[in-house]
Length: 67
Image 1 (spheres, one colour):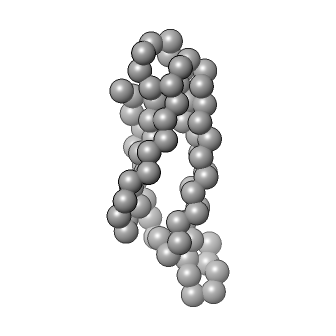
Image 2 (spheres, rainbow, N blue to C red; image 1 turned 90 degrees about the horizontal axis):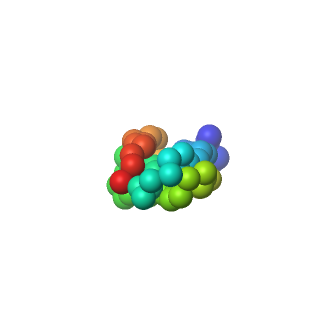
């Protein structure tokens, strides 16, 4: 989305733990300009919603994992 001279990268999503083990589900977001954002859901059926507005960002790498 473009607003004035700035560009926004908007990321909406969720991560959910679907197993009854002791591990958590994670999504790791690495914007191209740097930094790391990590969201986690722990416990079977737990869902974590997330919304990010990244100013003047053109892309990001997203990874799902369990640990």
